[in-house]
Length: 319
Image 1 (tube, rainbow, N blue to C red):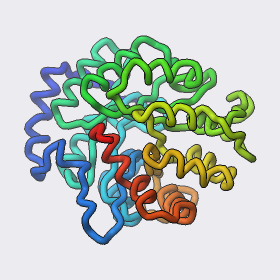
Image 2: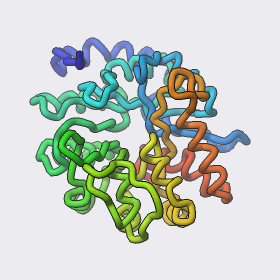
Image 3: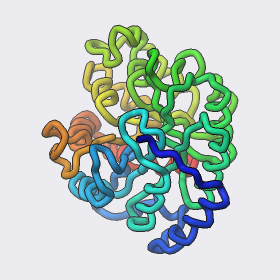
Image 4: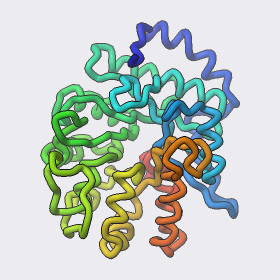
């Protein structure tokens, strides 16, 4: 059953603060600022879940170790509508165990009256952003705008799952996203999922036809234009949707990666436990995407941007 917390903001703070303050000693601001001076490649994964295919936090850390991932944005999904049920409290608990690896995000059902109060409480407890924002609510809903406005106030990122169609999430990217980008310029909006990546092309099929377009990309897509005009817009490369978009037309992808190198975030959204596809189709989204990016991006500084530096910028709002 989907998780439904009956804690008030005051009760939640009292119950959780002591546990968070008893962590290994890294503050919320320390986490996510990995030392880039060493010789080993840093990798910050912008999209991981615990409880994905019943994966434990220990399995999630094992996945990170196997894929060379230094740190990860751990994204809760409190309603379970997308098939993964992960309360923010569980993410904060994982942060107390692995404060040097976990960058905790929060998420709460914006259809509930106390949603913004809960996000404020999670901010006090050490969360660094909102995500994955994923309920069956259209993008122009006033409650979505209220959440984006709060992230703007906090100088936070928010990861949004864009999926058009009757059973989708945050529908109306093409019609409504730019309104928010113009109105709120501190928040970093991180785009993710099928409709987001379909808009890599100027030719976007109806969601009833396919959510995973194949074949050549038509230049002039919405993503290129919006990222070119709004530096606070980032692209989450994770999951099958991200890989499909990048791999469908490699002649186009090379230029796309170069043009947007400061706004692309490595992420996997992978449920496997070992970096080799254990419990998931015999493949790992993280390993596959890393191999692809290392083949496509020959400039080490550009690769560093995608693998970890852009994630640091998205967390802090630094240019």
